[in-house]
Image (cartoon, rainbow over all chains, first blue to last red; front, top):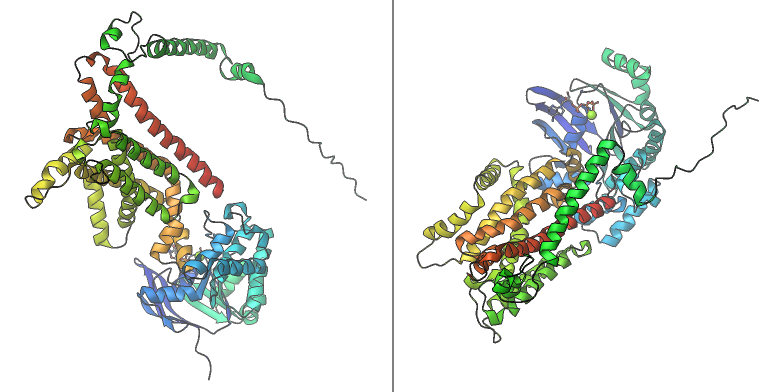
Length: 247
Length: 368
Ligand SMILES: Nc1ncnc2c1ncn2[C@@H]1O[C@H](COP(=O)(O)OP(=O)(O)OP(=O)(O)O)[C@@H](O)[C@H]1O
Ligand SMILES: [Mg+2]
């Protein structure tokens, strides 16, 4: 018997006022899958992944994450947020806390770990993203690439089953993109379920097992990367690919 | 092999700044004819005024505790500090029984010690609340008495500086958390909660403190069951807390608005609940951002406590007015006002300096 999908969206619709951002989204993600979502600006990519941890509320349809359905029940929302880590384009580290405090905050306050244990955990993840020496600094003292790696470590500290990335490298200078992608590649190798909005097509090729193309609030195409890049089915995908691959 | 024509320049030392006081003066005071003229004129005015004040307040003043006639006959026409020597106990402690005035003195030091203790950031822990409860309890114990051989002293006999201090300190300690709740309520997604907070803030801010004090003193009793007495000091305290909280709530709301949406989202995304993310993420940053206006509000409130005089509480200012009312000393009201102005100034200046110190300390914590 196949395992049930860890993320399941069925006929999800969302509007901002009269603006229809997500249209009949159906999506199933199996455990351990690595999905890259791309598409033109404003197509609803961020909105889609933000619905999965309820940073945005959907109005129709059903979203089930790890067997928990997203409703208005605060307890369920908090349960899902413990399972799902998120990394933002603008890092969103807490500037008034040190790197170590950024990492231990949720383990201590949400998981109620003892401080010492939380700090050991945090140091383990800082090692994993290769910046243990920055633990005592404040976010403002780090480079963009380092900040984003701290943000990834912060999400990992909650030991999530799913990681959501919203354009994690778009705010970075070119020489820092690689250090963040390396961390993500390593994470993918560890079997983490990942949903990643990105335009790093090299990353999509090597890491993703599915690429999703969104346009105007719809999932236009979903296929494995080899197929997606060599034989896109729809004209819109072809146009998009020709635009982003030729610059 | 390509020839590299670029030869890096060696580092050179920075030019010396014009040294010494003379150098500084040349650069800042006498760098053009007009500026030199202005500097000379201003230095003359400042020097002349400074000399006049110093002469009146120090050199020509009467310092000994003498009879008022001696001051009036002083040929140098200087200040009469004998007035302060004669009346300082009335000014500082109001109508509190004369022989028991060690109690308000001690009580005042308890409050000041608690304030000093709270200034150190290392002590900002949950138990600081217990320290404050203890300090306020001790204050009340000393002021009221009635046990351990101390006579009972009613609050209507409390006065002077301890009264001003307790009104301000309780005002700050209670209004601050209250204002945070009001500010959060005003930004809440619950319409009823928001409506209540907005109404409260706008109503209270729209009314002068004097009328609140009047209402608390004369109208509140009308709503209370007959026979139930509600202490006058407590009523004034409630009015001050309500007034300060409304102002402070708006200051804190300003701070909340300066926190980017991403901070709320990141806090939610790592699983923090509403109160946790407020307490750990949003409020520390929001309050830090508005320390100057918060302290501004506190300083304003500290001086506004002098308005309680209109509901017959003998605060520092009213006690001074009573001291001046003595016909023998009436001529020396300026000295009296200068004396309490200095007291007010010391406290306000301390608050202002402390806020600057705190800003620098907190900023060095999180360089953005
Ligand atoms: N809070 C909001 N209120 C109203 N409209 C919004 C809101 N957030 C997003 N939108 C609109 O919804 C559409 C989809 O937004 P979304 O951020 O999901 O796009 P995206 O695909 O992530 O684009 P980008 O590549 O620029 O990040 C956009 O047109 C945007 O203007
Ligand atoms: Mg986006």
